Length: 233
Image (cartoon, rainbow, N blue to C red; front, side, top):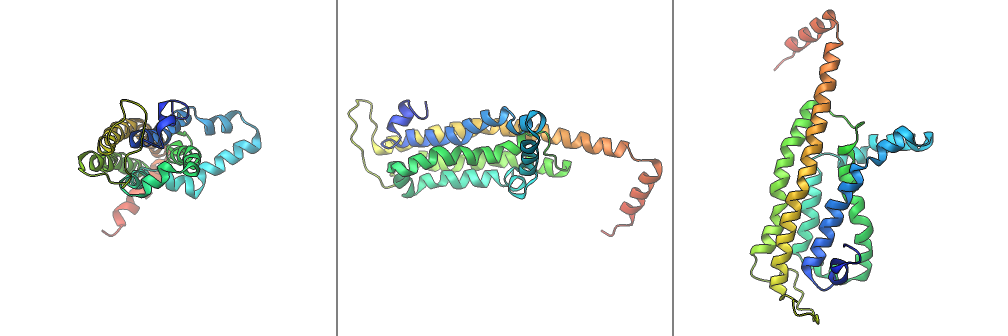
């Protein structure tokens, strides 16, 4: 559908097809790829060298930076805010950018989502709780570019009408409004798997910390309690 269907055929002429293509490549393709657990497969059943590489990637600073709900809303917001500028028309009508989008946008989406779906990536329960709350902020942030596209009464990217020999071709403003509707719907639906992944990771972190506390001896618990009480506010 994305590459060879109506979206791939008209994405250079129609705004809604261009927006739909980017949204599917950014949200849907990485979601299905991350749900298959490629890193978990490498770490449990792959060759030793690949398993070590997968562990190193998940523990790397870029993976920890991208794989949290604080960064991902900002990345998604920045990506779709481009649709509100004349740069969107340049990217949409360029063959080179079309090829780049096909490769880079799914990679970016996978980099944001994959760490959330991997078992080996654990954070403190407090950080996981903060991520879960910030994910609800993402529901609002993702809608901002779409709402602006939908309510604007002028064409934001400055591109004019492209002649299409089809009876259903919309006007430039109608095209933009349809693009906003599609982006709004897809962005909100795509946040559901992220919320589920964050909830699962919060449960894992909470269970891990509970087991660590249960394994402490009475003397260790007393020492931790005294240390906590002696801290200055």
